[in-house]
Amino acid sequence: MLEKLIAFIMSILSVFSGFMFKNYDTDFEISAGGINTNGTVTITEKTELAVKDYGKKFNYYGIKYISDAYLKCTLHYVVKGEEVTEDFFLEPAKKTTVFYSFIDNALDKVKAEDFTELTVEPLNSEKANFEILASNVFLREVPKQEIFIETEKFKLGVDLLWGGALSYLEDLDSDVEAVKVNGKIKVDSNASDRYDTSAVNKNVNLINRNDTGRLVQQSYYGTVGAPYEPGNYMGNTWNYNPVQGGNQYNENSKIVDIKCTDTEIYVKCRPLDWAKSKEYITPSYMEAWYRIENNNVHVKCRFTDFSGYPATPRTQELPAFYCIEPLNTFVYYDGVEPFSKENKLITNNKLGFWPDEGYPNFTSVEQWSAYRGEFSDSFGIGLYMPTHDTFLTGVFARGETTEKDPSKAGPTSYIAVVKDYVFESFKPKEYDYYISTGTTDEIRNNFKEISDLV
Picture 1 (cartoon, rainbow, N blue to C red):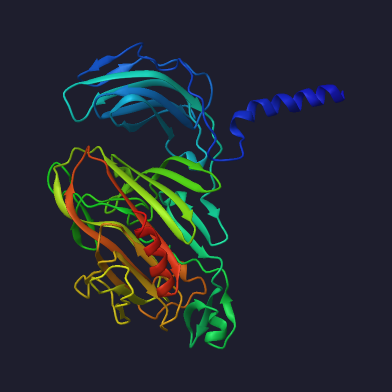
Picture 2 (cartoon, rainbow, N blue to C red; picture 1 turned 90 degrees about the vertical axis):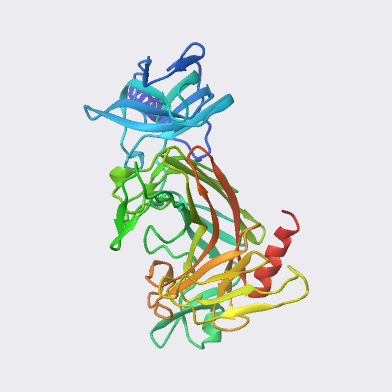
């Protein structure tokens, strides 16, 4: 009897063994077979490719391919007896490349079966020379909503329901505390001593996560003209606006892929269009690599748009950065000798909400700016973008934070590194930014170390 019970348990475990793994960076083997074009196929219109019957449930798939053009692909499969389709997009690849993706709604534990059809069509050219070398489907563990990495200096987290945008950053060695003074929240190092009161929060998240438009995230502005059909935001006609976190309705972008090790989080998402509902998910991908490097957070961003909308010159946020409002004194370098002994720092503790203030821009030749508390030696958080020196800034509801977790409050302090360039489909955009914390001098010194390397 015992032997039968053990055999039964082992059989159950074997069924789920493909679903259980310890780390999000697990490799998934794509063996020969599955969808296989058996050599290069020239595609001039929407083309159906033969699909092998995998015979198992899945929530994740991979395709190994070569292509000389951008492609739109449509997957057909079954969920709970109903046929479902979803689109994915492939970039050109001269050498063998692998594309991985979760299916739609995988974070809601949806599982697919009966992968029945794949169609492919070229996007940026009249024809595509395309070869699928191999493919496979998998049953991956469903990631938690928030994923973290941690060092002695920082705890960093991303929110997968909001496109894997940076949603959590805690300084672990600066004794940062939140206190309540006259009903309003103050944040500083050793704030309980500085304000002579008890701390209400000793695990302060420095990133504002009040809604999908906050966070620290990628956001891009494109056309408002045909064939794009504009949305509406706060009574204004709104342009094409892929946003990593989601849309104005707090609906979430789709997580396409994620890998997480002890030192890095990689996230790929398909963002929503800010002014439209989730049905209008954009034909684009955003990727982000998050690393903690000594006293700094290093984030690499990549954006690829497949819409084919008209090229449009616009001012872009690289990135959009929202921190907690109690850090509301804006600081930047206003000298002419970057990272020299000349300590010409300008502070502004009167910034208001940016549209009402006429979108104030500041130029810092050291290419960083920061928000800190009310004292000259207060704790703060800064943003550094090598090669870009113009910052759009503002504070919403200055001095009005009352929640002991200011990261969830409505008031917020904002920075965007702004740059004018032409938004174009089929031309990936990449950039890096850095975040540091501490006193203003510490932040500046941390960014100087980076400037010496880049």
